[in-house]
Amino acid sequence: MADISSRLNVVIRNRDVILFKDKVSSLTSYNDRGVFDILPEHESFISLIKNTIIIHKNKNESQEIKIDNGVVRVYKNDVSFYINFENQP
Image 1 (tube, rainbow, N blue to C red):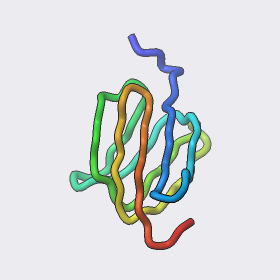
Image 2 (cartoon, one colour):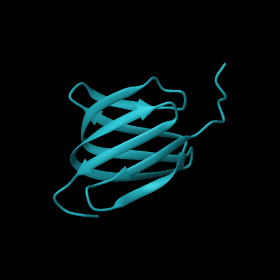
Image 3 (tube, one colour):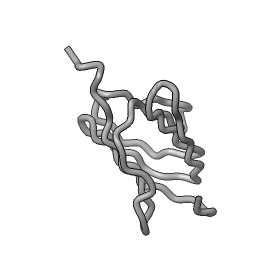
Image 4 (cartoon, one colour):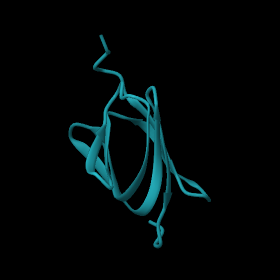
């Protein structure tokens, strides 16, 4: 049985810099099929993404990063985003 207190190790970067690196409780983003969530113990997963990444640091705190497009890779509890946006945050 999965440990529900486990967290995701997240790195969000563009080609120049790491924009976010921390442990979080979950993530939300969008692909061509719609909105999806990434939770601890998620299956291995690779997808093109668009619009936004919502970082749920805990159940009371979230951060949103607006993007044009990107790629997300999930392996075990490690999540890597490689993103592109026209206007840097």
